[in-house]
Structure formats: C-alpha cells, structure tokens
Length: 104
Image (spheres, rainbow, N blue to C red):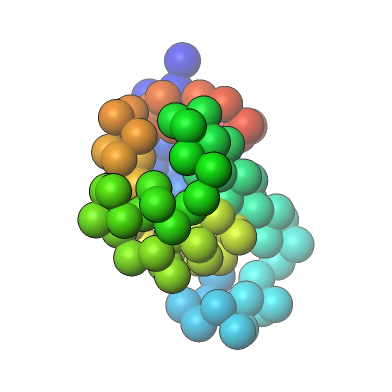
C-alpha cells in the first residue's frame, strides 16, 4: 500500500530537474521524462475508466483547463497542486493514484 508521504516523495522525484516550460522538457533526464510519461498514462487510464472518451469533456466537467489537462495526459510537467486537483476529480487519494503504474 502506498502512503501519502511515499506518493508525495514520488511526485517530487519526478518533478526534480524538470523544466517549467514544456518546450524545454528535453532538459529532463530520461528517467524523469519516463516518470512524467507514466503520470500522463495513469491520468489517461483513469479518465477512460470513468467513461470519458474525450479528455476535453472530462476537464470541462471537473473545472480543469482543457489545454492543461491535455498536456498532463501527454506527460508534460505539472505542479503538485494541479496533480491534487486531478486526483480529486477522480475521487481518489494520492495513495490510490500512485498505487498502480509506479515503482515505489
């Protein structure tokens, strides 16, 4: 079982060194880029499991910027507060979110 502390630490490990500007994402190490891709894949998987074929509809229904949500699913960098908002939209805890698809 993933604890909230482990989930937060994993998030910050993924973020460490990643650029705030998506166009500079290539500055991230291959490991960091891979972790961000896992994050995006998990977000997309959960959206699809909630019955939303379109990320735009999910974002609209949960008051999240559609453009930003699309970038999150692509594995681009995001702030911790944004991740919390997305996880809440899935009616999950951070521990539940990180319980699948991530090595802890």
